[in-house]
Image (cartoon, rainbow, N blue to C red; front, top):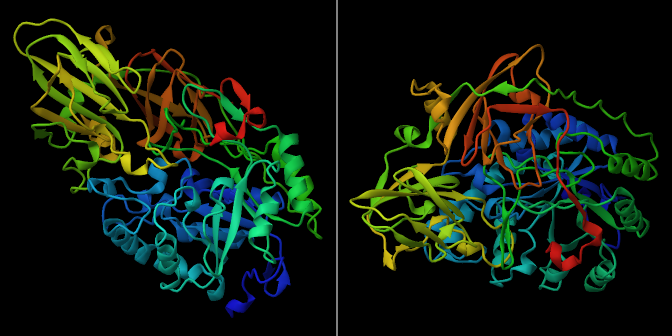
Length: 605
C-alpha cells in the first residue's frame, strides 16, 4: 500500500486514503489497563464515536534492565495495536522516549541515572546510545503495524512536549532521524502546551497543541505558526490527575462538552487525554515538583469519560451524543458495564515484621557512605528502580539526626527497631534518644515516585543521595537492603514458614496476610483500608499500588481478572498503623473534590 494514501497534512485538512479525515481520538494506555480489559475499553471507545486510539510507550517497563526487553503479556504492544485495528480504530503512536504521562521519570528507565553526568533528553552520548538500542528493538516491534504495511498506525509523535524542556537544539532532529532511519514513513507530529509551542519546529513534522480551555487563543496561535496545515489538539485534557494530600480534580461534563463542541465546530481534530485513565499499578506513579515535591496517587481515573474501572460516565454519554453527529452511520452499541462486588471483609491471619523479611531480600550491600537506589549493585547491576531501601548503620550516641535534605523521598527512622521519627522534604531533623553502647540506626526510605515533567529530570536519584549527619558528623558504615518488593520477593515471602499469628505483638513496618474466598466468577472490586496508615497491597502477587490515609484516594482498584474463583492471597505492606481487617466496596472513594476549571491555569502546570 502506498504511503501517499496514508494520513497527510498537505493542506488545512487531514486526508487519509486521499479523502478528508478528522481525527476523533482518545488516549488509553495499555500499561494502565489489565490486558483482559483491553478489548472492553477499545470497544467502548469505538462505541463513543472515536476513530483513533493514541497511546504512549513506557521505555522503563519495556527495558527494565539494560538490554533486557519485555514486550509480552501486559506489555504486548503489538497485540494491543492489532486489537485496535480489529475493533476498527486507527492508531497514533507516541513512543517517546520521554512520555511525561504522570509516570515515573516520564517513562525513562532509572538505570540511566547511574551515570552521574547523565543529561536526559539531550544528545549526551550516554543518553542517545541508550535511545538507539531501545529504538532498534521498539521499531522492530511496531514497524509491521504501520499504515504503509497494512497496519493501523497512521502517525507517530516525535518525543513529547520538548518545547517546554528545550535544552538541546540537536535533540529533536536526532529523535526524528531515529524514527525515519529505521523505516518509519508515516506522518510525524510533535505536541506541546502553550508554553512550548513557540519552540522551533522541524520540516515535515506537524505541530499540535495540548490544552484544556480555549481562552488563550491557542488554536489561532497554532494556525498562525503553521498556515495551511491541519489543526489538532493532541491532548485535550478531559480531567486532571491527583497528588497525595490534596483534593481529587474534577472537570464538569458540561464545561468539557462546551469546549469539545467548539473545537469540533472549528474543524479542528482532537484527541481526548485521557479517554480512559486506568491505574498506576505498582510503584510507577510520577510526581510534580515546581518548588514543592508532590507525588501522584495510584488511581489515574483522571475524571475521564471512562472511569478507572472502565465504566461509562456522564461525560461518556454526552460525548457519544456529540460525536454521533460526525458519523453518517449509527454508532455501535455500548458494551455492558463490568459487574462489581463488595466482598465480605477479610481478617488478617498472619504477619511478618520488616526485620524478619530481610532474609528474603538479595544480599545486602555494604559501603562506607550511603549509596542512592540507582547505584546499588542489584538487578544485574542496573540498580534499584522503585520501592523501598533500608539503610542501617551503628551509632553510639543520641542527639540530632539531620538529613541535610538528602532523603528521597521519605524515611522512617528507627533505633534498635523502635520508630523514632520521619524525615522528608519538610522535616529534616529527628531527635535520637540518648544511648549507652552501640545501637542500630535504620532508615527505611521510600521512593514515592520520580518527577515526570519539568527541568529537574536529571535530579531524580532516590534513596539517600548524600550525607546524613548525627550531631553534625556524617554517618559512615552502611548496610543497605533493596526492598523493591518485586514478584520474586513476594513469592519467597509468601512461601516462607516465618509468618506469625500472635497478634498481641504485631510490629510495623511489616507484611500482613489475609485470604479472600471468591464464590463463582470473580468480579471487579475496590479495596478499602480504613484504620490503616500507608503502604502497598499485593493480590495474588500483583502490586495494586500505594494507599495513604492522607488521601484524596481512599481505595485501590482490584480488577476481577486478577482474582480467581476460590482462595486469593492478599499481602499488605504497612508502614505505620494496622487494622484487623481489609474491606471491599462496589464504588471508589476519590475523597474531597476540586473543580479544575475554577483553578488558575498556572496551578495545573
